[in-house]
Image (tube, rainbow over all chains, first blue to last red; front, top):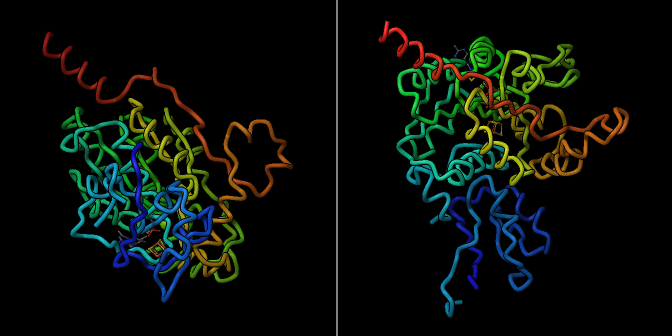
Length: 68
Length: 273
Ligand SMILES: Cc1ncc(C[n+]2csc(CCOP(=O)(O)OP(=O)(O)O)c2C)c(N)n1
Ligand code: SF4
Ligand SMILES: [Mg+2]
């Protein structure tokens, strides 16, 4: 199974809040105008945030088996 | 630092883009990149042509052959490219103003000829770049800097306009509905003939603010709650569809002769004569 990791690129985040609003598991919050993972363990790696981030600032990255 | 898709399709040195926080254009530009990627097209055989407007800035970010032209003329430039090199896949990214106000004539004639272009409209129902003037797709009654008492104009429905002019593929997508819109763009690119995909964008800065639609999240939530897929809409009554927006493919007619193919045939015929 391919594992996935949720990555945030703070430099590109403009704090619009779209990912926060449409994450089905309330993983994300805005802190000082940037998205952060408030509840990372709840993430189901669905990619809803990545699909709708207008700034490409949040995405799932494939990780090799064994890495975290 | 970006996803595989963004790394493979965008000019990273030009990112982050200039669009406002929550602007739908970024989502739609990603849909176009995903559609091209899904089709497995060779980057060197893809051309992105845009006009002028916030939406048209997309040509600067996408890592293909790109041409950022003049206001309203993207389809005219794209027609020239396709006539000179029919083997290229030519995609126009344009705004509602760019494609249907100043550029409306190019749009209808490209549709009439059925030339193999894919026109993706980032339709935010306003002139974003110049500060919020109304466009041919601004809903009647909506406010704009040039409609301080509400617009009295009736609107263009872009897929209907394109079909009326002869387009052989016409569809509508929306910023919220990413997989559906990506597929509609993908099918439009694969279609051999004129294709238009009207993509509902969100402009929180001008359309949203002028019309008290709330922030980007609120505008996206409106799409989530009020956009109906065509298959579902076909089973609904006009009363049930009141105030809703329908996305999906409205026409896909692959058998109609395509313009550059006909032109090539003409050249072959005259060579023999
Ligand atoms: C010939 C010409 N006329 C007018 C303008 C000014 N102008 C620039 S963008 C624009 C409208 C853009 O609206 P739209 O195509 O909907 O793009 P958006 O910015 O909303 O994405 C206008 C009128 C121009 N650049 N060139
Ligand atoms: S003005 Fe509107 S369309 Fe232009 S970048 Fe800002 S939100 Fe997007
Ligand atoms: Mg516009």
